[in-house]
Image 1 (cartoon, rainbow, N blue to C red):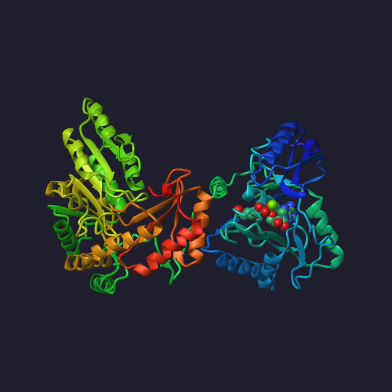
Image 2: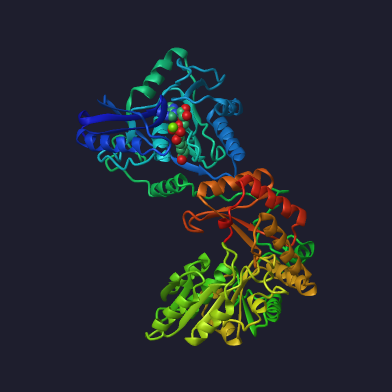
Length: 631
Ligand code: WAQ
Ligand code: MG
C-alpha cells in the first residue's frame, strides 16, 4: 500500500456539549467519501442520543508505523469483584506494584475523554490536562484499511485492541487498564507488551455508565514527551497477526470472528455467563422441585454408591458400564410410571436425542410443538426426518398436518410434545393429544421432564393428572424433581429393546455414574413412601401465585411472569438478587424477542413465608404486574 495515499478520518459527535459517539480510521483517499457517510450515519443512529454536533475531520496521515496486534487472551470471571481481582493480579505481573490502589483510582475517576497517564510506581498523575487526559489516536487495523468496513456500530473489542496495541508499543509504557463507559458493556481489559491483551469478561455491574482508562508509565520525566507524541500524533497501523512490519503475507487470526460474534451478542444484551449461585440466597429458579437434590438421605445414598462402585462406571451400558443400580433404577422408574420398561440415559437432553433420532429418520415425518424444549428441537433437526412445527398447544392444526402427511409416503409419523412447557409452565392436553395421534397411527412422545414428581396427586405425571392412557413414549429426567441427573425413557419392552439397539446417544455415552443412579433411587423411595411432599409443592405454588395476584392456578411448579422487554427483565432480576431472591430473566433465544420473563420455580422445600415475601418483593420491584403478565 502506498502510504502517501492514506488519510486519517475521525468522527466525533456530541449533544449539548456531551460526547455521544466517536470513531476513527486510516484509509486510502478513495474510501473517504463512503466512510464519511457511514460515520455520519453511525453518529446519527447512536442509541444514546441524537447528536446536535458532528465533527468529521480528515487529514493526510504522516509517516506510518506498522506494529503487531497484541495477542488476545480471555479471563472468564463470575462477577465484577473477581474481574477486578484478576485485573489487579495482571497489573502486578506487568510491573505495577500498587495495582490495587490503581484499580480504586480507576473506579473513582470522573468521566474523561482520554486516559490518565500515571507513574507506574507512585501512581502520580503525569498528564497535563487532568480533565481530558491523554488520548491515543491516529490508529487502525492494517487488514481493513483498504475497504471502509461496516461502521454501523461500535465494535468495542476491535477498537480497543487497536488502541491497546498502539499504547503498549509506546516508549516507557508498563501497562494499561480499561473499563468501558458503555453501561451495557462489562468486558474490560488489562494490556501490556509482556501480558498481551487480557480480556476480563466482567469488570463492572451491568447498567453502570462509569468507565475509564489508565496508562502506567515508567521513565525519565524528560522522555515523557516522546510517549505522549507517540500516543497522540504517530500514525499507526496494527497488524492483526504476528509478523506485521515487512512480513510478506499477513495471516488472519482464525479465532477473530468468534470474538466479533460474542461482541455482537453482548451489544444486544444477550451475553450469557455461568453465575455461581450465592450460598444463603433464596433460589426461586431451581428445577429441584421437591428439594430432594440437597436432601441428606439422597446425598448419603449417592456417597455410599460412590464408595462402593467408584466415581464413574468406565464404560457404556452395552460395554462394561452396567452396574446393578442401573437395572434396579430402571425397574423402579417403570413401576413409578406404570410402564413396562425404562431405559436410562446420561442426561435428559441425550434421552430426547436418542429417542427422536432412532424413531424418526429420513423416511419419516416428525411433528413438534413450537415451544418444545431445545433438546427436542435439536433432536428433530438431527434426525433428518421431515419436520412439521405446529403452533403451541394447537392440536387441531396438528390434526390437519397429520391428515395431509398421512397421505404421503412416510414410513412413520412421530409426534413430540413437552408435558409441561418449560418456559410457560402450562400443560399439554394429553387426552386430546393421544386421540389425534391414534387417529393417524402416529407414535406419540411426551417429555415429562417438568411433570415427573410434580403433576398428579402422587407425582406420576400427566397420565395421573388427566386419568388417561400413557403415550407410546414418555421421556423423563432424573435431574429435576428426582434430585439427581440423567434421563430416562419409559414405554413398552419393545421400545426399550429398540432404544438399546438403535439410540446412538445411549450406545455411545458412558452410563449414568453410580452416585447419580443411587441418588435418584433414594429420591424415588422418599416420594413413594410419603406422597405428601408432592402435595406440599402444590400448596406452595398456590401460595406463591396468589400473592403475586394471579387469579389462575398454575398446574406446574413453573410460574413465569412475562415482562416483555429484555433489559427490563434483567433489571428486575438484578433487583431481586439484591434482595436475596434468585430468579433468572429468561430472554431470547430461549423465548421469543420481546417476550422476556422472570421464570419463578417453586419448590416443596420453600417455606410459605419465604414465598410470600418473594412474591411481594417481585410485585414491589416491578411496580406491580399487569394481568397480561399472567400467561
Ligand atoms: N485514548 C485514551 N483514552 C480513551 C480513549 C482514547 N482514544 N477513548 C476513551 N478513552 C478512555 C475514557 O476515559 C473512557 O471513559 C474510557 O477510556 C473507556 O472508553 O476486549 O469501549 O470507549 O471486549 O468506553 C473494552 C473492550 C472497550 C474489551 C473499551 O472504552 C474487550 C471501551 P470506552
Ligand atoms: Mg466511550
